Image 1 (cartoon, one colour):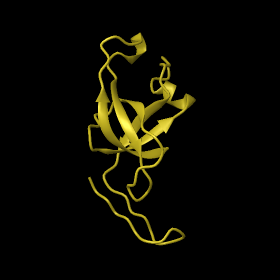
Image 2 (cartoon, helix red, strand yellow):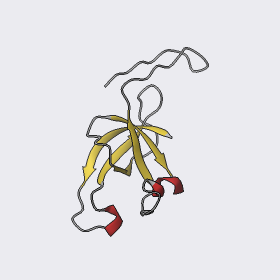
Image 3 (tube, rainbow, N blue to C red):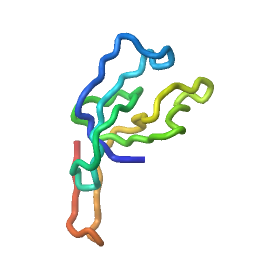
Length: 100
């Protein structure tokens, strides 16, 4: 799983049949301190995330099976909206606690 922040939407009036009813969101991966890492990507969403939300994302082959009886052509899916996080002092120093 990865942490991310929703930074936008993707609208597609024509898409693969299995994607009907799924919202497509642009996600910026973030580190435990809320700082952007790597490049953004598109993730499918069925749980109601929106722009500005901090989310948990899973990717790879397992994301295709959000409906185990009907695999769909995606490689990233939002699996949770984060309420808060806490990072303890340690190897990387400092603390972080951000809330939505």
